[in-house]
Length: 88
Image (cartoon, rainbow, N blue to C red):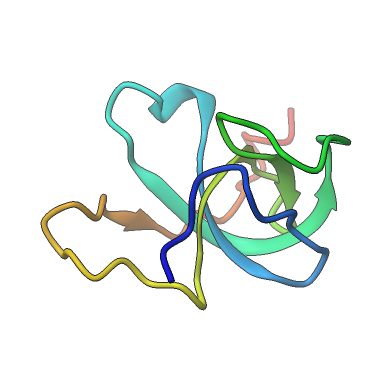
């Protein structure tokens, strides 16, 4: 079963891949664990907005338990840790 963006409501603790606003053009995905779900609707056409445990906010594009079968389609995943400069 493939994931249609915005059709599955994320829950805190789930591992997801999100696109940050700064990465909309490139489609680069960042992987993390959901801390808070910021979208209240059960369906959202562009993906539910979530805050990851790392503090990153983005729209869910993929759930890690449902990997894409087409590797060429998959954007690179970036694991990002906040630095002191990010917290300013």
